[in-house]
Structure formats: C-alpha cells, structure tokens
Image 1 (cartoon, one colour):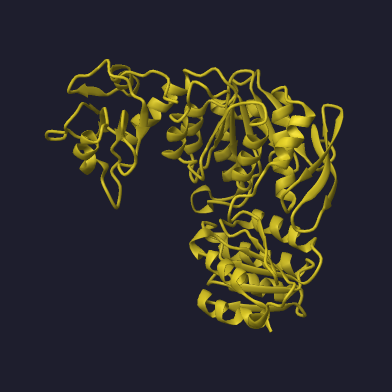
Image 2: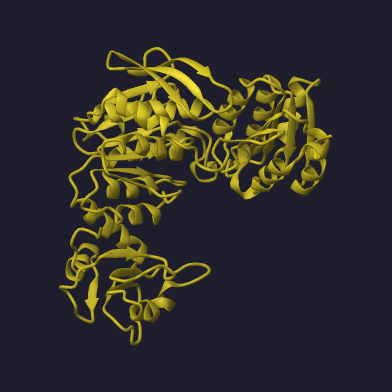
Length: 468
C-alpha cells in the first residue's frame, strides 16, 4: 500500500520549497524521517537535531533508494534531487496538511491531559470492526509525530484516529491545521505541562485550540464530568465554528452519553451500561479502572455516529488490550502489579488511586515524582498525599525528591497510614521485599523520567521466598 500520488514538483509547491536536481514527475511512495529505515521510494526529511543532523545522511539515503531529500541547506553532491526549504520541520507540516486534504474520510482527533492514548486505542479497536483504520502509532502525537502519522495514510484507509499532544500554546493550532478533525475529542483538562501553560485555565486554552481546525459541521465530543469542559462553548473559542455540534460524555447526570451501573470485575475487567441515543448497551471492558470506562464510552459514541451496530461496538471493546505502562495489570503467582508508570500528573494519579481503592485485598501505592507542574509542584504533590490519606489505601511508598510532599500530605491526613519515603529509587528497591506481602495489589505510578519500569520489573520477579 503506497501513498496517494504526489510528485516531487507538487510536494515542493505544497511546502513552498525549491526542487533542485530535476525529477519533478517522480512520485513519492513514502515519507521517512529516520535514515535507519527502509528509504526505497521515499522523500527523506532531514531534521537537524541535538544528537544528529539528518543532513549528514542525505548521500547515504539517496544511495539506498530515496527519491528525494527535504533539506534546509544545499548538499554537495547529494546523489539525488533535493527540495530546499527554510525549515524542514515546518515544511513537513505543510506537506502533511496538503496530503490530508486529499482524503474525504472521518478523522478523529483526540487530546486531553489524561487518557489520550487509551482513548485512541479504544476508538481504533472499535472502528476496526467495520472500517480499515489508520491510527497514531505509539505516542507519535507531537509536531513531528502527527505529520508523519498523516503521511502514513493510504488510499485504502476509511477512517483515521489521530492523537494530538502539546506542551505549549500554539502547538495545538499547528496540529489541528494539519489534522482538520471531523470529530474532536477532549478527555480531561488536568494539571499537565504547567511549566509552560501555567495552570488549568492555561491547559484549557491550549487544548481547546483544537476547535480552530475542526471541520465545518464537525462534532466536539467533550468529557462532561470535567468542570471546565462541561460549560465549554465552541464558538467562544472559534467564533467561525457556528455549525459545530457539541456533545458531552461521562458518568454524571446531564451528559448526552452516559456510562452507568459500573462494577469492577476483579483487577482485569469492568462491566457497565452505556446510554447512547436512547439505547442501553451492556458492556464488558477487559481493562482495569474508570479511565477505560470513559475511553470505551467515547469509542462507543464515535462508533454509533459512524453507523456501527451495537454488536460491532461490543466486539470492538472486547478486543481492546491495554498499552504497556498504562494501567496494564500483571498477575504473578504472588502479586497483582498495576503497571501505570508511563506517565503521571495529578489527574491521572487520582484516577489510578480511585481504581486501586476499589480492589479487594491489601492495596499498596508506589508513587514517584510528577514532572512539569511548575511553581505549584510541591503543593500538587502534597494534595496527592492527602488524597491517599483519605482513600482506602493500606500502604504508601513514595520515591523521589518531590514525592516527599506526597508522604507529608498523606501523614497530615492519616497518621496511622503505613507510609514510607525514599529519596532514591535504589533505596526503595532494596526495601520493597520487606514491605510487599504475597497477595498484595500494587499500583506503580510516576512520570516517565523516574523510570519506574524498573520497579515493575522487580515486582514481577518477586517469588514467594523473596517476600517472606
């Protein structure tokens, strides 16, 4: 499956670049940014980076079959045609925007402080029961990942599901100008990337830039349980979007689409009933925690809007698999480990704690530092500790410099709580065998820079003798 036809001349025109070396009628079969990949028939995008400069690999990729290279400076004897632009980063966005315009298909854009990837995966799984779906791979959701995702669309694709992540103002505008979603989903407005965005109000402003690119007559599907999204008025943000339909989904009364009768089926599943357009749809979600209820509900709504049957929707949700590091449950011979260490912010930690508190048995929370929280980082960590102290958590283990404030917050609310604090991860790893008991339910959560996957690996390796 190759790209829809784009010649080098048309690509240069779309990017405002100059084609050097001829070959204007040559077609691009793929766009590649990593010189280590197969570059046959590719437009190679030379990105200057901190560790490596793509311009250094131009001659090599031309020898290996690249039909053209996108460059910011002229290359001596490149070995093939080049398109010269001022900025390859901006040019690849321009090319992606043009390429997106060649497709008249539903495009689901997803953003939010928590749950983007799980919602993307759930929607893609459901829609795959009826359509040939193209989706964001991994977490390629930024200003380089999104254009590469769009340029991966093929003529056969019938729907696209695109994750959109940002950390500063203006980024979402640039992303949505490329994606131009027909459905815009915002999962939650939380405390994330506050170093740049300042506070939740800043997060709201940055995320809702998504509406600028929402297609005419499109759908804004928002989490109605979020206090900032519920009253959101699309035309207040983008006055020209008068034809956009806004709908709310969530658990609370007043949402257009609701999940009710939620029950946890151990640590591996959840049952509930979806209320969509007057119909009641019993659902079993093969994943642990309320965030997956929201993700599945959004997927069911999108599926229903695209004409899927209840049987197709149920089948798609049943086929869902959690992504490693995101509430991925591993049951060993002696423990249940909830691996939620891909990332963390106050909203996602609270959701994970609520899910942990609903499990039977001894509940252990191993929490680490949360990053990019700005000047309020200490306060936000302390508030997480207070949440732990008020929850049905039996033991709290805090690791990292900022996590001492989680420990202090928990102790201030519940002095009887079994809690330990370790400045270094190595100290915690050494102490865990004396703290963890056979049969424990253990949540592991922190921001990525804490590398808590090392703790997950250690827990998975514990045997009966280790823990006694």
